[in-house]
Length: 447
Image 1 (spheres, rainbow, N blue to C red):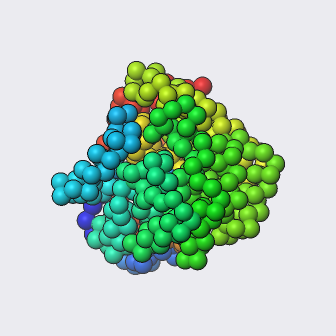
Image 2: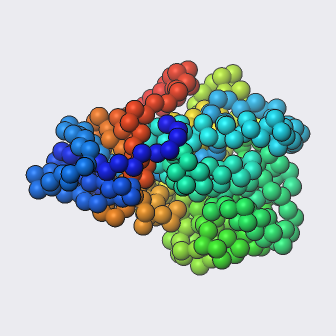
Image 3: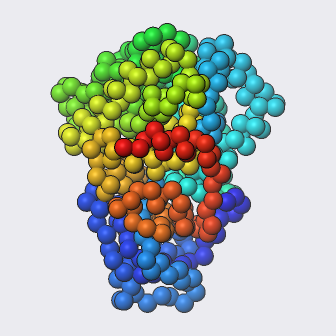
């Protein structure tokens, strides 16, 4: 759905409403009133809630309503088809970066990002955080959505991530520097362009690794990361860190990052830093495991994924750590968010629901805990819980209407009957799916 979003008042009646809490509280036969400002005006039993004149009534008998999904780790530059390993080399990234910033590439990049945002919305995602953009295309889209020029999810936009020269993400989606002053300056550059999220490449990554052990190898020390965190936190902006090893996670936490992306197995000192982090913006940090990004590389045949031998071996090590970290965080009651790393190989823009399913199958979550992590939990982690994440009077009407109960079967999230973002309905949400990728993932994740 594109164009100016609709804001007529409406009422969803006779619904089973999942509020978004960790317990999976469900309100039966409930009516939700949504006003012209896009806010929830009332949540109450249908029998006691008259529908005001002028409100469109939507009968949700037999259906479930829940908060819109929040994806805390997305990229917008691709659709999830396998990435070309040759483009992941430093030389390949330089060529691609030059093309993306050219008169031909910039319009393509904007169109690709816009299509990704629309797909996310139609799949039921009503808030996203981008974590590594080619430029500031996500900032532009965020402002267009905020101004009502197009329909879309709420966006926290990072702009390019911050890395060392030849580090993870560089140069395609990164600003690079050597010293703490360089890092502070790059953080200010992103904030000056309107970014309201910041990302650090604390360690090497799998997708652009050129040697064994590079993924997870620390690339930035505490002083440089602390310089970034200080600048971002002065503006009230949270900082994410790509970190895929125990040492990388520990250094990032010591620097004061607010979210660890991907993660690793956790020791007691790291667990304590997640709970009480004196340099983080809110005094604590959270983990966003992104299991969707790692598992396909280790579970699907290498001839199909197209990854190199080096990428595969790095992936095996990193994925084992990610799974251990997600389980450790759940067992210890740490804050765990939901992000998929969209645009990576086999991480489509429409499969956010799979991350919830993986948290249940691989990390010990209940369905209610996974739904909470993707709604109110993510909202608290991203600092937007005063606006979204749960179905409460006064909050934005970010809603999904589902044909079944996701507490019983998370697969009903695949095809929402209705998506509402900030009070604007997407009446017939549709996404272009890749049947071959979905079939591969279904087989890979089958218990």
